[in-house]
Image (cartoon, rainbow, N blue to C red; front, side, top):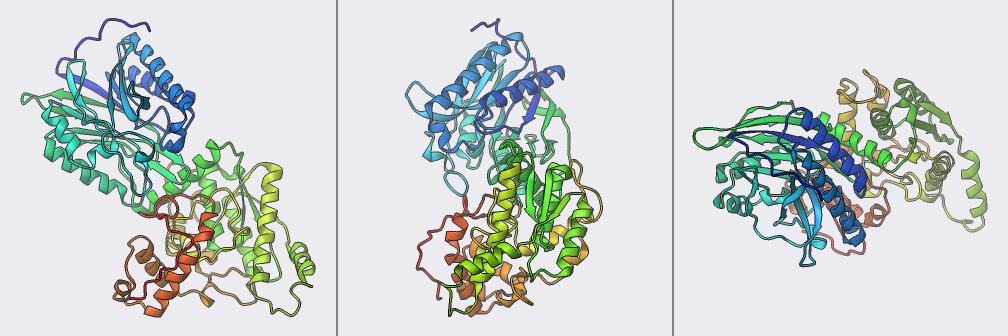
Amino acid sequence: MTSTSKPAALDGRFRLAVAQLNPTVGDVAGNAELIRAARQEAADLGADLVLYPELAIAGYPTEDLVLKHAFVSHCMKAVDALASQTADGGPAMLVGTPWLDEDGKLYNAVALLDGGEVQAIRYKNDLPNYGVFDEKRVFEAGPLPGPMDFRGIRIGVPICEDIWNDEVCECLAETGAEILLVPNASPYWGHRAEERLQVVVARVVESGLPLIYCNQLGGQDELVFDGGSFALQADRSLAFQMPQFETSLAISEWVRNDDEVWVCTDGPVSALPGIDEANWRACVLGLRDYVLKNGFPGVVLGLSGGIDSAICAAMAVDALGADKVHAIMLPYRYTSRESITDADDCARLLGIRHDTVPIAEPVEGFGRVLATMFSGCEQDTTEENLQSRARGVILMAISNKFGSMVVTTGNKSEMSVGYATLYGDMNGGFNPIKDLYKTQVYHLSRWRNTTRPEGLLGPEGVVIPENIISKVPTAELREGQTDQDSLPPYDVLDDILSCLVEHEMSVSEIEKRGHDKALIHRIEHLLYIAEYKRRQAPPGVKITERNFGRDRRYPITNRFRDRS
């Protein structure tokens, strides 16, 4: 490849660009174009070096896609092509990529591209293998890294998990690193930003070095990467802060002081959102990227007049715009006039198309063809579920005909205890509230009615009618039905579920919180027997510390019950 002479050494100062990008897993050409565009923007701002997120050329997480040699080859060729472009004398780049070494082993790597060449490669040492991560399945652990020489500056480049223990940063400091630049792909959950800050503070204190934390942005299946890139000075003070939930490129000025310590003299400081806004934006970003990255023209959902479908409709409009959201009311004999009116009001407030498709004929048709087989049997949830399944079939038919993806609307409380119908209201492609408990759904609905953050596409003001929020929740599958006919109040249910799911507490520990032991036993039993349903549910945004699927992986066949 063509190269120029080595770029001139930096004399006591440099300009660093941090590129908080939204790559797509597997889109090597598209990701390379994002990287090139960010470099051009950084060059226009006079940057010397651009730091990108972990595995930026491949997207993260690659899962088993990275075991396909053709994919890794494409990534490595793209990195070589990016390296050749640095022969123009512009900014160098630190680009995350899978890398097949001469030893035949596959690594999670970062490449320093400068002067038209790949100047250095470093491998991730600490491969996470917990929660949503399973990197040991696909990558080899690299050796403890030493610093890279970048135009006379010795930069340490620990990769994401490498800073969650002290060994890698300690090694880099002891071998002469002057500054730590960290590419990350750290997914969101409610209090993740605070946790990251605590980890970075610990590494800065131990190493005595400033640390720049560059995080990925965007939705990838169940995961949302929230950005929020930042840097700390060597004295632990904030050097700069980038926004959450937004693609962004930030320029910071760094100067080596008389004590030979690099100090940031100029960088942006963005305010981070509160927890309600962060959770809402995570749901919106996850839905938006799932729809757009998978090529759907829009979404369709059943709008029942209940709170779950209303909040999903509001999130969909915030994510995609009203013109890409199609709501369907699917009434049956148990659907109240109040629900029809509430759904109408919700659609009007959101400005979305709203059609009505009655389901009496298909439901009663199912009843007729099953009448002989069901003769002599009492009506029960079987007949109730026929209503939900008829709705599911109709929504899927609309999706097939017009291409829009079906949004499912079951919250975490319902998904926990099986209060959702397989092949019915669980039909669909993606669920933005899958990891929100019912109490969180109510809370966020009230919050959104008073707040619309910048960048969202929905209207200001009330978007969910107050009557939907205040009325007694019901699935309306039989006369006079309410959720609390078979479930405890949601504040009680959600506390028990949080204890069981997020914290793996024992029954005796939960009982000490004031809950009835028999109720805890019942909820635990419902949680376990609903596992087979959850395995067949569509993906949804991770919001809590422990979501179903990637985080919590329980066996379907499971006879354990805690009777302590």
